[in-house]
Length: 160
Image (cartoon, rainbow, N blue to C red):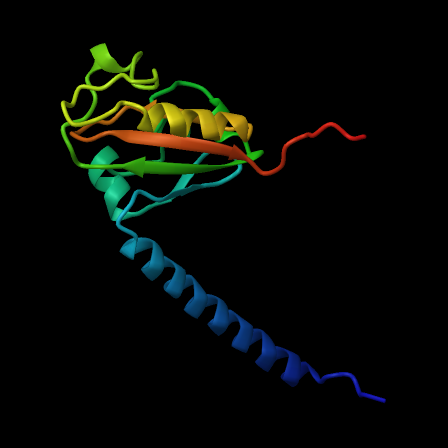
């Protein structure tokens, strides 16, 4: 038979948990800061809460913007901002993709390079689509290309 904890014991445990929470928060921020790819976190209301240095360099400061405005260049909630999926943003610091090419980049065998088969993005698009997701080219305010992969948390399947 165990006795109930005293108020002092509970208060001590709460302080220990608060400290642990702060330590874990700092570890998470350190991890996110060290990732060489773009990472952002938004809440259920699409408010951007965190961007790592890669995203900040590519898209600028948060300034209280919604994720659909900040990253997707839209004026209202877009499919990427719903809480039914996970979104992965991948960006680089290369020359970017011109507006005239944006409608062709997912076409099989389309390439602007002499040493490329042009099937990479079309295969990625197909695999992600086959899993109920989407792949979209995001607008970038500076050089480089940014892609957003959206995958559902779960997918309805036919039940037998």
